[in-house]
Length: 253
Ligand code: NI
Image (cartoon, rainbow, N blue to C red; front, side, top):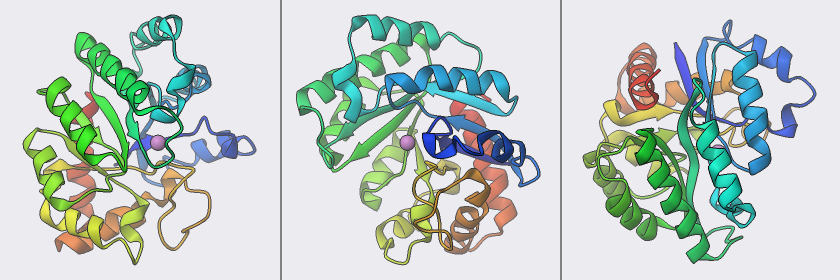
């Protein structure tokens, strides 16, 4: 089965047809979905989704763009939610210097606090990092050594990907890999072992070709799997089988 390791079905872009869409996942070959947390508001919706659908799991965390809303009360709420059976990771957490919505020091502070919480609870982390390669790498080295992690929507060099793989982390590959101009990510996929790759959508964002620019859903993951297979010169079935295994190991599913 295909596992979507990073989706946002709490997003309002799914408000019109969420139930219908999610009920079509099994027939579309999508076996399990992990819905990542982003805003404080997303948490309640994520828990509800995991309660409503057997194949839906969740992660709770605060995205670097949203850390201005965080305080100790919300942090302790986060800690409580992480105890729920179907909440399997802390995320998405990290640094975003591209949108640069919050001060870098504040982003780092909440990134490190959430890594600490994940370590305390022995849970994997979902890392969001954009235009912040060096700082993310430094913080992961200092605060996440030996932990399970996925670098979601990986956008950096093959060299850095190899470093993350050495640290035991997974590299999240989504729709971008199908884009014509995505030379760097294609190179990453070619160079790192399949045992370190997991598939993801980040839906409703980043739909693969031929749906680029449209609303993304997990049903489009076969296009990502096909591109990975082509780059590695193996069958789609092999990609699906190995990435399922990797995703289960990452999240303990
Ligand atoms: Ni995301």
